Length: 123
Figure 1 (spheres, rainbow, N blue to C red):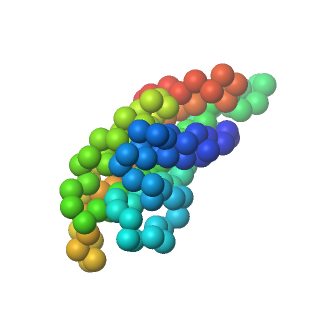
Figure 2 (figure 1 turned 135 degrees about the vertical axis):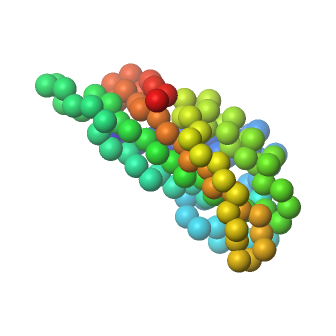
C-alpha cells in the first residue's frame, strides 16, 4: 500500500481547481455556503500484486462527490482533468438525487500504482 491521498488532495486544490471552488475536503463538507463543495474518499488502497520481494502494486479506488446549487458539470470536468493527470481513470459518473435539493454528482476513479516507481497503470 502506498499513500497517494496527499497527491489527490493537491490535485483537487490546485490553482486551476481554485477557480472552481475552495471547498474541498476528505470528509462530509462542513461549509455549505461555499458551493460547489467537493468531497473525496479513498475507498480502496490495497495490495494488487505481491512478489517474492514484497508488495509491488497497489489498487486505488477514489470516490468524489460534488454538490452545487446549479449544475455540477463544470466542477466534474475540472475534477476529471485533475485526477486523470495523476493517472487515475474515471470508472463511473452519476447524478444522484439529493433530498436537500442540491445537485449531487458521484464520480469514481481507479488505478493500479507501482509502489516502487509510483507509476499508475490504468485498467
